[in-house]
Image 1 (cartoon, one colour):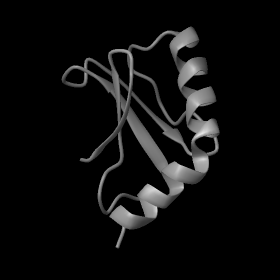
Image 2: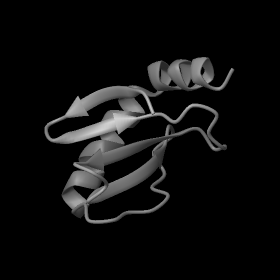
Image 3: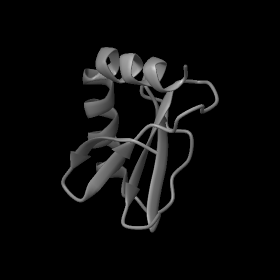
Length: 77
């Protein structure tokens, strides 16, 4: 699972050969906290992150949408 960004202690990954919709996985440590979020800012699930963290991640992901969708497409080939 390629690391795309870091935001503080959070790591943003994209899985190779992953399912639609386009999304990233935000993780802390070994999955202690995790949240997949679509590139258009929809939270798919949340384990352990605060609402404030999720809002910050969604804002970042939607700002980086074009880049993240390009990376997603590269890893899905």
